Length: 391
Image (cartoon, rainbow, N blue to C red):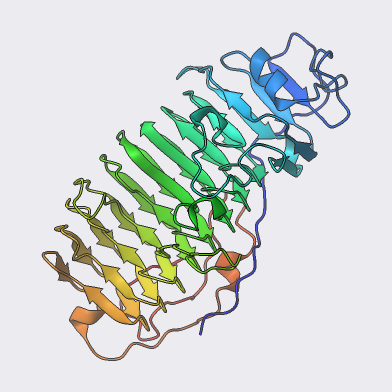
């Protein structure tokens, strides 16, 4: 059995500022105890992130000092940077910045209610050319909700204990990089557990979206969900585990519990050629990896499915997927292939498969300084075969 997993994460900011700055500089500081009447320098910081957002210009930086920022209204980002001058929103010098949305509406909403679009997210974003890093977003109606967002970079965010999906990207959104995300314990009593994922890129389109080094665990619905997103998404070097269990005693529970749900829409499509490479799904309540009715040509390469309650690789929902060098061990069923093709996978090779380690503590513990996951022999075949993920 895999080791019991604890919600461990490390927030490491990618931006540091040395010494105080002048008001004329392009960095605005926010700090507990600041005032929105201040100039926004390091010695006279602003009090709210929203005020800094209203003042920052293309090429500027908002540096947030450590502390908890309890919201009474959500943070709305609706201005753009540029390709040459993106806007940066970051924790200052590795300090722990917590954005707490508990006091916002719909935390949780009534059963069956709909969250108005503008209130989705402790951070609600409809903007392009931003760099956001090192923030912890919790207990909001979604953690980060990004609609019609293009050319953004999201690094080393932690989105947890939200009342909907931890991080959701949707509508017309292209060329976004989601790197080093930790998203866990998100749930939605409002929809009986049917909707809150760790990470959702769904209900939209846009090429060039990449997920790398994500850890998505103990969410009420799925780890990753690409429901009804029609453009290819690339998922790399990521893990999804422990999703789909009713840890909150939600009545009429309807959480799905897949590790990586790669699209679908009512079981009939649309077709989208998502790719998943060098990723792991383990201990989920349903499938490890599933096309979920996506009728496109998905590609799964060097992925691992372990101890999922249903099928390791479930690609018989209408897709013409290609599976190469994947590993499925101790799932209820290794693979449901349908019209898809498979070569060089553990079930093609045959025989029994033992693992070098079932201790997940290294990859679920502190990250490397660049945000990547630490290397280990977790779920690596003991016989040295070049199948499955290496993280």
